[in-house]
Image 1 (cartoon, one colour):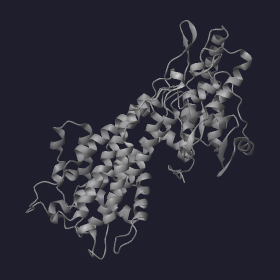
Image 2: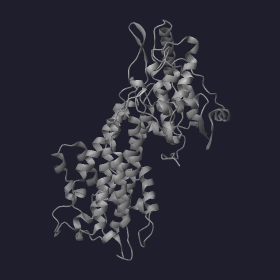
Image 3: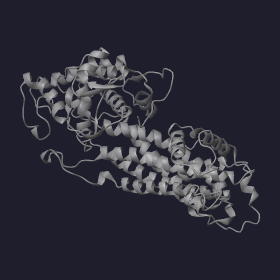
Image 4: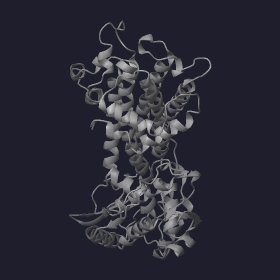
Length: 521
C-alpha cells in the first residue's frame, strides 16, 4: 500500500514544464493524484538550442566531463565519438546498484517530475525527447522500480536515479497497471518505446538531487498537515485537561517576538474562542500554573513551525533548480559547458535533518500531554486514571501512552543528523558527500511516527473531552471532535486502540483536520 495514497480527484489540471519552479502542490498532484504533465513549446525550443550549443562545443575537441570523457575518477579518460552513446547506457547499467525495499510509487513519480522539470530548464544539454520520454511514462502510469538505498547525496542521487533511467531505456523492473513486469514488456503493453540515450543524457538523468528533492517535497506537504493537526490537538488538550487558556494571551507572545510562537498562540486562541470549559474553572481553581506541555506549547510548537518553514524554503528553492553537471550556458563568448557541483545535496541534507529534530519536539510534547491526561495527577482535571470508567477492571487508554512513547524513542534515533557523517567515494574524487538521501528517507519515516503520536493524543483527548460534558469547547475544537467521532466511537468498554489510532492518523494524513485550524502560514 502507498505511503502517500493517491488522492481521489477528478482530472487535476496538467502541470506545465516551462522552466519555472515546481510547487510542492504540483509535485504532490503528479505523484499521488495522477495529474498529467506537459513540456511547454518555449522550453522545447530552449532545450534544442542548448543541445546544439553543447554539441558545438564538443566538436572543438576540448575535453568535456561526461560528454567525451569517463566519469568520476575516470574523468581523465578521453573517449572516441563512436563510443559516446555506449558510454551513456553503460553509465546507467553500472550505477543501478541500489539496495533495500523499493520506493513507493508516489515517491518514484515525484522523482520523475522533479527530474523532468530540471531538464526542461535547458541547462543540461539533453534533447527535448528525453523529457518527452519522462512525460510519457508519467502520463501513462509506468513507474520504474527503484531500491530506496544507495545514494550518498552527492554527484547526484546516482543509484536511485540510475534505476529510474533503466526503466526509460527498457531495462529493469517496472510497475504498470497494478502489475510488476520487466520494462520491455511494460513499454510494449503501454505502447511507449524505450529511449536510446545520446551524448550526455545518461549523466544528466542521474546527476541531480531529484530523490532528495522529491522526498523532501512530499515530506513538507505532509508535515504541514501534521503541524495543523498538532495545533488542534494542543487546543483540545487545553480544554480536555481543564488547562489555563490565559497562557495564549497575545501580549505574552508579542513580547517574545518569535513569529512561529505568535502564530501558534493565535491559532490556539482562535480554536478555544467561546469555549464554556475555560470560564467554568477560572474562579476558585487552586492551580497556579499548568505543566510545560500545556503552558509552553506556543513556544515549543512555534519553534517547530519556524524550523518547518525554513525546510520548506529550501525545498521550494530546489524545485526551481538545475542540479546537473556539467551545465550549458549561452554567454557573451558563445556557448560554454561549465563543470560545478550543483548535484551536491548539502542544502537539503541539513534542512531535512533540522526538520526531523523539529518533529521530535512536535511528537514529544504531544506524548507528555497524553501522559498528563492519563496520569490522574491533576485532580482538578476531572479525568480518571487512564480514562478508565472502571479502574482495575478496565485499563482504558493506558497503553496508548506506551505506543506514543515508543514512537518518540524511535524519532530520537531518526533525528541523528545524517549530514554530519561523511564517507568518501569514487577513489577520493568525491571526497565530501552530504548523505542527503539518508536524511530524506529518515524524514519520511519520522513524519509517519510523529503522525501516529499526534493521532494518539487526539484519541485520548477526544475521550477526555467527554468527561467535561455537558460543557462545550470552542467551535473549531468541537468540529474536530465530531470528525474524530465519525471514525472512532467513544470508549464504553476496553477494545484495541490500534485501529482507532490508525483511523485518526489517516484523517491527519488526508488533511481532514487541517480545515479546522486557523491559518498559521
